[in-house]
Image 1 (cartoon, each protein chain N blue to C red):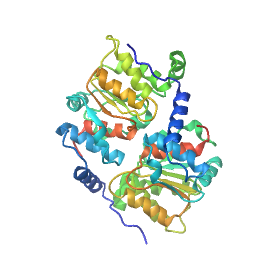
Image 2 (image 1 turned 180 degrees about the vertical axis):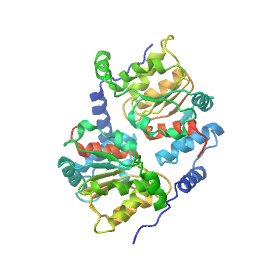
Image 3 (image 1 turned 30 degrees about the vertical axis):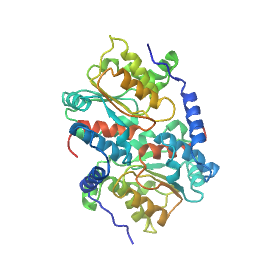
Image 4 (image 1 turned 30 degrees about the horizontal axis):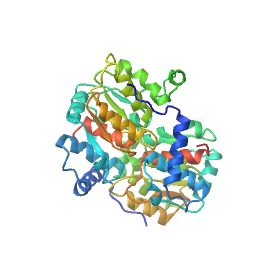
Length: 209
Length: 209
């Protein structure tokens, strides 16, 4: 007997978001933030994630405005850049991931750092006004913060800082919110990752649910 | 003052896996399963995930043997296929994702199903002996189970069934373990997703941590 299940994608989204809004505690978020958090919860399959999400004031509005103005999206990992739904982007925005650039392995050796951190050096020509989406490597977020200590380094418009894991992830995100070089959002602690990061980008790119 | 942090990728992995083994309850897993679960926890940034992971008997051994014999890996989403570390694959295995095939939108309309489910119809020539990695869409897993109700449909060697979300995810994974057409692993409930699925593939592909 074949399994019977909902096969209408739009209806699956509608019921999913309704379930999240019924179960999650979203009261402390602004309307602009709420649609981002709902999508992050959706990607994680986890009501309760909202307790760990922190926006700096105005981040959601700043990121949305940047994307509408055509800002490129700079991603630390291919899972992030591949996950972004191109049809949601408001201005045919460039989605850039430099991790697999042939210059990166040598650069990483010279810097005595990870490839994920070294790849950010190749972001410099694209960084002014960009939306940064870090969903994998704490070393990438730490290196970005160190790059931005130089006042001559171009400023992105906003940072989605959601690296995941057990070593450096929590610390790198706390450092981002302490430095706050530009408006930012994080998932505090160990949780994070490419799916949650992609969800934030996709929500900031379009109000369509 | 620049932030100081661990920049040695191998050391980050070592400390991460040591933290997971110190904190997680892994006693009920076989040695072959344990290295898979540790990597799934790592990708999720979540000790406690292990309570939701269920292997059918012999799944980890069957999947590892299939990969060593050159099995293709069939992925439901680009985030899954992009996340698989090619250098870990033991036999230059093909990694296949048919979601963006130009035939899929029409097929989805004809089937009155999602593109994720329709894309699986294009798996048929690759399905015999393959390792299936479903990390996104419950409709893909349900459709695979319905395909496999036909005894003439080729059998994969193993299924990683980890779709995520609020509508159909838990149900599709329970259906997989109830039908159990081939050895399988799931994350019970809403949790799952591309990162956890990729982690399982990467762990089954190589014992290197």
